[in-house]
Length: 302
Image (cartoon, rainbow, N blue to C red; front, side, top):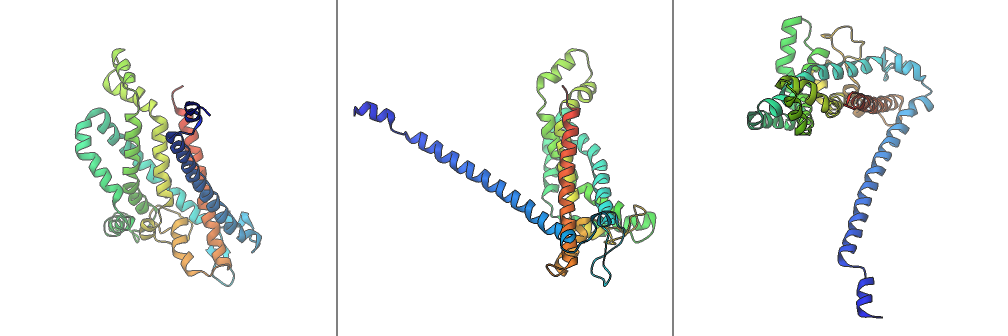
């Protein structure tokens, strides 16, 4: 064969590298997909054992108000923990979101230089603090404060909300900052050229354009608040009771899971019930993500 033709038909070194890169990338993606699918299937299989093996009624499990799985006559009502998780997640997001948007707006629109110099390092420092430190701060600061202000033990949903507010604030702020920075500069220039003031431009143009990104930031913040276990367990009181006020001891799905999963025997009703709580936790996380992403798409500029 002609040497020139042979060299043209031969696979080049760059082509072989590209093929290897594609194979490695595909293998990594496939590994991630398999891991996620295996995790979902494992939690689903273990969580459904309560209903198919122990024959517990799913309706009584979801809406029951008494939780005593280790007793002689076990009671499996997950509603107190379900409400506790929902309340601390929503309250912490409601409190943290305005502060996060304000801090991100200051860092991107009002004083970017000061924000990058002082606020951004503070937010990065807060993200790196371990959960147990937040829990100790909650025990030594927030619990006595709530006890002095409202009476009682100081443990409860309100205390857990304050701890989670501090924990999710840097996450929402950092992602909101990225969302505001991604708004094209010509949007601001066009708004100012039409006569809008600086704050009108921020409110009606920048925030609205960045709404999907801000909602995504709130989702991540809520996901962290919803899945947080250690810090919440230290300040919420861990009482599997229906929350009748914000300052009475309560519990969340994560706090009951972390306390009980190590003290139960695999395959027993108590252990299966805890896995059902884990499945409920997983489904709620998926539901929150889907719901808020849908809101983000609906509220974006057309």
